[in-house]
Structures are given as C-alpha cells and as structure tokens.
Length: 283
Ligand SMILES: [Zn+2]
Image (cartoon, rainbow, N blue to C red; front, side, top):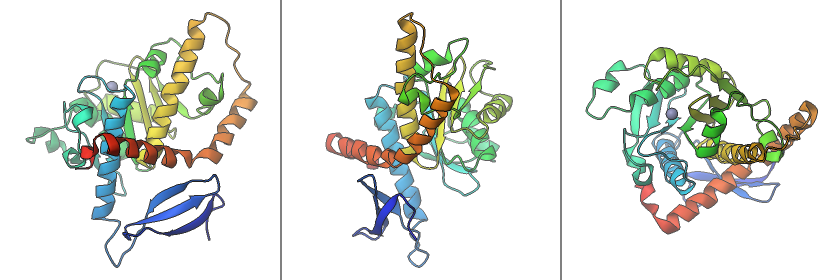
C-alpha cells in the first residue's frame, strides 16, 4: 500500500531506480532494493557518492563553502560506522563522486593512512555517525548568516516567518565551543548537543544538519541559511522582532511536514543545473 502522500509508484527504464508520483505534483526517483540483482548495494553507494558530490558543488553555487575546509559525510553501513567523507583540503568545486573517502569510524589508523581526512572532520562526523546511526547524512559548514547567528549570545532561531518557524523545536544548540574540534571529547560533546534534533547550531562556529538522504539534508541547510539571513536582517533593522507564539510556531513547523517532498524535487532540479554546467561531479 502506498503512503498517503504518494499517488503512483513504478520502475525507471534502467531498472535501478523506482519512481514515485507525489500528491503535491512532482516525481521523485527512489532506490529499488532488489536482492536478486544485487541492486541496493554497490549501486546504492554509487548513487550516494554522486548525490554527496553534488552537494559539495552546490554549496559553492550558494557560497556556503570556505577555502578548502568544512566537510560533508554520508553513512554507507546500517550502523553508521562506515561513511563517505570529502578528502582533506580539496576545494568543494573540484570534488567528484570517486574522490570521497570511505572511512571506518572505529578505525583510529585512518588518520595515519596516505590520504587521511581532516582531523576536525574525523572528530565531528565520526562521533555523530557512531552515536546516531539514523543520521545518515551530515553536512557541516560555516555559511555566512547561520554563522553570524551562531555568534550571538542567544543564537535561538526565533520564529518570525515561515522559514524560521520551519525549525521550531528542531535545533540542538552547543554553547561549549572550545577551539577547533580535534579531540574525541569535542566530538562527543557535539553529538550530545545534537541529540535527536536534525540540526545542530554550533555556537561560535557554524552549523551541522542531518537527514536520511542527501537531498533532505541539503534542503535543511538551504532553508536554515535562508532563515538565518531573514533573522539577521530583522535584527539589523534595530526594530523589535514580532516573534510568533509557541503554538503558531509549532503549527507552522508541522505544516512544513506536508512539503517534505520538496527536498527531492529541489535537489533533482539543482543536479540538472549542475549537469548542464559541469557534470564532472558524477565522475
Ligand atoms: Zn567547522
């Protein structure tokens, strides 16, 4: 039986993906788990690599990247301990699917190998993937407006419009910044502050978003940066904020769930944009 939001479902021509038609009027590609053909194993990792590589390229398009730092990861094993992550100091605009490192969160020797990841990335992503296997994708960066919000004494995402209210009750906040994260204690503290929230606002630092898929994590990041921009612009006016009541903010956040599928339509459209500009991220 189909979920209430799905009108129709069927296979794609190449057999490796399904397709779903949503009531809100868009189609979404979905992976078909097919034990007899082995699809859903290597091809699933391949699909994940392409989507994660697209997220890096798109972060550049939106100006969320910062020099050759910051890091995105995606779990490939059910327990979250094996995950893909970007190599150290490779510019987001140059990352291809095949560049992504396949790491083991339990293997301390990974830092001694020939192509070690960034130690800060290892701490944050390793700790969260280990402790929150349901957080399949983690995107961590320092986009300008979210980072400005993270620098406020009170970095609460106050609900003053639909986009800010989207995050009502969804943000864990860490106010224990102790320098650039490069030890296990820092990673563990961040994992605890995230808790079961999909978003971690890292005080004096930046933001980390989590979701089940790259498309959904990217949509969180997209809306979180837009919401932060709106809130920071409202603060910059010097006028008092018209903050919604908890009841209206909660209702608005719930209303957003009806639009969950937007993330997939948006991400597919953005990948189409990349494909017409420079499809090398798929390599
Ligand atoms: Zn950072």
